[in-house]
Image (tube, rainbow, N blue to C red; front, side):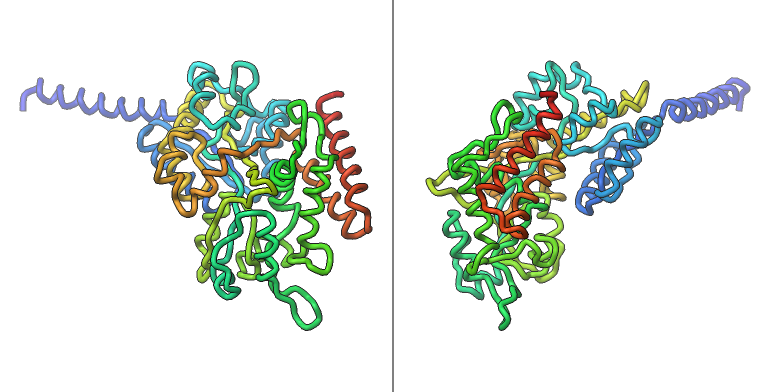
Length: 420
């Protein structure tokens, strides 16, 4: 071998090593945080794998925490310059995260507001402030009625209820009690601590002719005849001699349905993934029952992803790229198939295959008449409705009085938040 050839090989080796070192030097790692939920973690693992394959210079490290600890972890980590570069948060927490300076707005050149408005379902606009979006979802949620097919067959029920009146009739056929009058099987689950506070607020109140809020959700408007009718309907499920359920049955509504001890259960599309893994549980799902005049109404919520204030420089650039992928059609379809949450874009959700799917379809169709509550304090506003029911159950307070008390309490929360 000539000297020139040897020199060429040496230079090639040096260049190759330099290229590897250069690649390593420009590699960037970002952190992604979400709360722990089996199906969501599995879906994100798959998305991260696909993203890293397309972006070999970016590594995404995912961390997840129990739901009860999640907000505290995020709130303490980011101000300390630690924790996630991209974070998942419930849409109702957006204002809190903005005020605490935990997140930063999405870059307008990559996420132009007008383009997002035209491509996403309308409820996503709650994440917009002026000409900028602060966060975006991969998926959205709506409510639907799950039903136990085995219990329906045993009771001779051929199809799920289509109206609120039919819901009560079907629930009575599914309810079982022991000799002492104790419930051993409920016709439908109940509990404001789960999804029922959303069903009551955005579903029942509207179906009985009301509007739960005014002034862009800054003024409570359910202390009305419609609100009272909605409250009386809801509490009739578990109060009185004809009760078809109990708010304390098996502690958690979803636990009763998973155990095969509840005939029906109202829940979000996120429940699909966990129910699919339960051996021996045969279930179906249908749209929420229509109201007295055929009116349909639903609640839609979503978890969003946002870029934290910790992300700077090359980490910020990598976070933007990751956000682009998390809001892509491919990511939304995968999230639907693994988690059961609905695509945030009509271009994915309203395809014939998805909209007519026997499981996903009822939820997706529900988006057409869904409302998204703009919470000032999601946990506090939920607790107001929990206490509204508890006053009636435990203290014998009338529906009228308890409803009025709840409206005043929630209005104070809104006034305090909006500075009225």
